[in-house]
Length: 384
Image 1 (cartoon, one colour):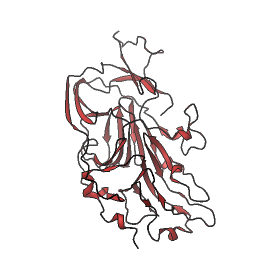
Image 2 (image 1 turned 180 degrees about the horizontal axis):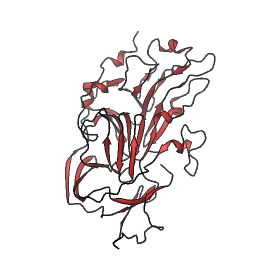
Image 3 (image 1 turned 90 degrees about the vertical axis):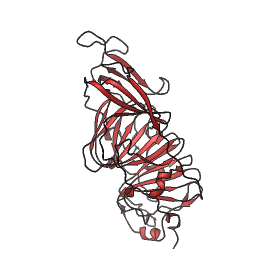
Image 4 (image 1 turned 135 degrees about the vertical axis):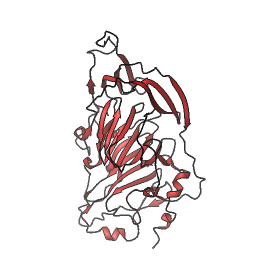
């Protein structure tokens, strides 16, 4: 997120001597993107972050893809998944392409290691559960409805505080930003943006760990998962400053843009990634033209796949979907309201739906493990 933040102890200049009470140096790490021309932060460690005692490959990260058949609309009932494991190993990938992977997780085990995605940024949408995102940049408490935006290379662990936890995860192979049209030349969110910096939560508590022992950091790199063992706690930062750090935004703080007639999906955009966007559908007033049709018109995704993850509420243009449903409407096929939903929407003044949408500009592929969750009749649900 492009605004400056700092936590802990830092020297008054970059790249100068910064010493511990015993006279030895803190270890400075510059963490930046795009070859030092993107956003960056500078962190000060107790220990050299390069000091690894063991390194090994655990497994490939990629998930087997289904054998492709007819291009069709898809519906996956994610609440039927028997997902276990922790927040990383418990991820069930459903849809993937060269730019992004979409997964769900319902972890029941704590993370006894730390994780770092070195292939791109992540968004973890918290459907259920509360806890703390522990990171090298400090702690970030989370609650239902939060988007946790975690930049590439961030070492983190999810400390779950609830018995029931459910996440929708967007793994990018590049940078995730706020929409460019809502930012001025200085990076500030402008007046017509549906959210602003006041809505964004950043780490405010930095715990500097001094423990020694054996600590594992699992790293996703080159679409593989690797294990690294350190002889010290990886969250050993005494201070940092910069523009690169994790942050949280709650979907309830998204202010919907409405109009006298139906507004197109881009008004719901919340994030932008490489060849994909993320949108938030939140409770809002319907269109106020006297002859308006609140239900969306039929539309064709000429060059994008549309994915909707249904969080809660009354999904006014759909039938047969439920909390936790994930639908994909691929490019090449028109889609829109189910039979009867257009007429039924006329005269209504409000919707209470809550959903996360991901539109990709390259085709998504369905994983084999998603097939067990599929509603095979969804393609034909528009028949009378």
